[in-house]
Length: 368
Image (cartoon, rainbow, N blue to C red; front, top):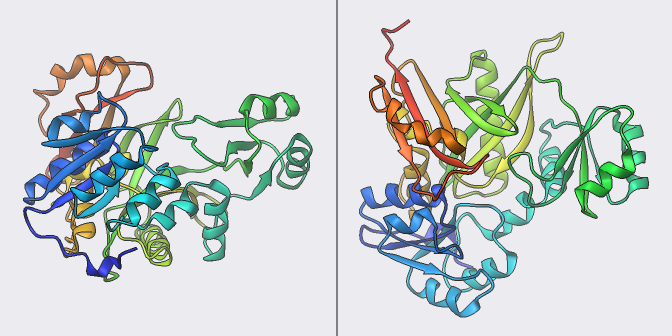
C-alpha cells in the first residue's frame, strides 16, 4: 500500500477508474482537461465511460489477471462507486495506489459501521440499531419507536434495500421482504430539508468544501439540487465543518459527499448525518457549470497529488435537475433555455428510475 503523499502525477500520466457509469465518464472528462489520461475498468460492455477514454478494460471484478494488467497500465487507481469488491481492491492496492484508501470502503460499505464511525466522532445521527432477525427487529422497534426505516447494511441505493415500518405493519413480513440477515433500523426523521456537503481533501490535509446543497428526492431518487441551500450561514458552516471532520478522521484523499437532515426544533435547526458517499456525488453535479472548479476536477487533483482549487459559485443560485427515464427524450427543450447546460450520459434506452442525464441552470445575480 503506497503512501498517498508519495503520489504526484504529471500531465500524460494515467488514472485508472473502477466503474464505467456516468460518474466515471465525468471523472475521465475532467482528467482529460488537465492533460491526464484515464483507463476505465468495468464489467459492462455498454459502460458510458468507455466512450470518452482511449483504453478500457471490460472484465469482471473477480478476474484477477485482468485486474493485474489494468494496474500495470495506470499510475493511480480510483473508483466511481463505493461497492468495489474487497478482493478486487486488495489485488489492485498491492500494485498501485488506490485512492481513496480501500480501507475506507470497509466503513462506508456497511451502514452500521458507518453510523458507529460517525457517532464516535461526536456527530449526530438518527437513533439506530443493529438488526439480524425478526426478534431483534421487534426489540429495536421497542427502543427506537415507529415510524422507522429498516435498511440492508450493504448495497442499497436510490431507495432500494429499505422499507418504512409504521404502526400496524406486519413486522415478520417486512423483515422477510428485505431478504437479508444483516440490517439496520433507523428512527424516522421529520426533517425540514435534506442537504449535502461535497468536500475534497488532499493527501496533505487541505480541505475545500463546495456550497451546501439542498436536495429534493422523488420516489427515493434525487431529482433537484440547489446551491446554496436555504439555511442560515451558521448552520451551513456547521455542515461544512462536519464534512471536514469526517474527511479528516478517514484520512480521506479525494471527494466525498455527506448527506444530512436539517431539523427544526425549539432551539433552532440542527443537522444530523444521514449517509457518507466516498466518491463524487449526484448532488454535486451543479458544480460542472455552476462553480469555478467542478467536483470531478477537484477529485482528480486530490488523487493526482495536485493542490485543490478554492471553488467559487457562479451566479446567485445554481440548480441541477436530473433527467430520469423518458425525460431524456425531451432534451431539445433545454437547449434554448438561458443559463442552462445539458449533460447526456450516453447510456442505452431509458428505463424508469434510470438517470439518463442532467441539466444545470445558473441564475445571474441581477435576476430576481
